[in-house]
Picture: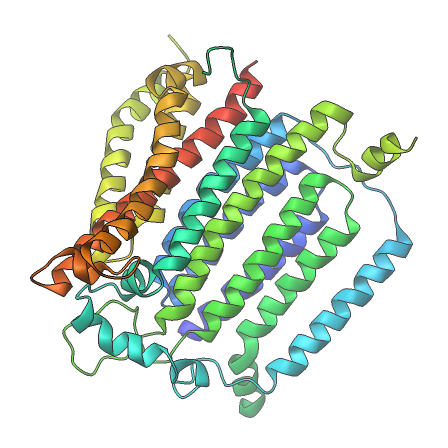
Length: 179
Length: 122
Length: 140
């Protein structure tokens, strides 16, 4: 039953991506992007990734949607569609190569949900076993994020900081007294 | 018949992620509007996220929050951590790209890539 | 009657609960899904909703840019400062175990709490600042 819902949601996500690629009304694309994030968050909940689903729903359907609508309302509302057969052919060829490569590689990968896949037998068991004793925090994602992989989170916070400063430097009209 | 179904179920997530990757890549390359390119980049990134999270799923497991059951099986928490970082980095990149597009619109008066390139020709 | 009366009244009642939920998610990141990033984004969403309904001028009057700048740098400084504090306490950089001299697990709890707080403050300030920048440009 779960697998049927999974397949349906995956089909919905791919259909929404294709719709976003073909529409020309930018506001409709932005709103469709918000719904797309929400359905993607549901897929993550089905895949037991609750922290990721929380972040994807809050960030995708909240912040990205608001910023896209704000930026689009400062510019044109429609996209101008132009036929470019040469570029279209090159892009279709490149995407076919990517798709063929990934499908060929996926045939050798372990099955979906296999507990003996190599990804589950190297580093992860050490984290899962040691986290309750060494750190004592029930949420293992938080313990890995903040303690075991704390450097990565420091880098990520620096990325957010840099993006904030860069947007302020680009768009904010500074007055003489520095406000 | 059931073999084909089992084979399809085993790889459906990876194929859906591949489809998202291809759609995102096509939109970035073909569409000329700068906003459309940013949306294509977002679709590409969500394809990568779906691929990683599908790899971290364990059948019969639960979310990686410790419960009192001694022989509980948890989903792999490591891809969740990496994708959490990646989602936040993607929103930072998108907001900076949108700020740049707003400035381009104010300087050139257009958000179509062809018009911006033509306006730059001497 | 003002045509946006229902929206304004409901928003005035709803924004405190959104901010409270953000603080809850921040503090409960150890026991359930949550943590710094989600809490920062939800906190920013509360302020964005207020700015959307009541006008960007009132939001800037409530949250001047100087406070947001303090938030943006202060959160990152808190995170890096926890690492420096562990250097002073005798361990390596970002080693939370030495923050509490009696119990390493307690030190880990303290370190994770401070670090997530730093992340939450930075993310909330950055998201609100970016929204105010876009909206104020439109307002002119």
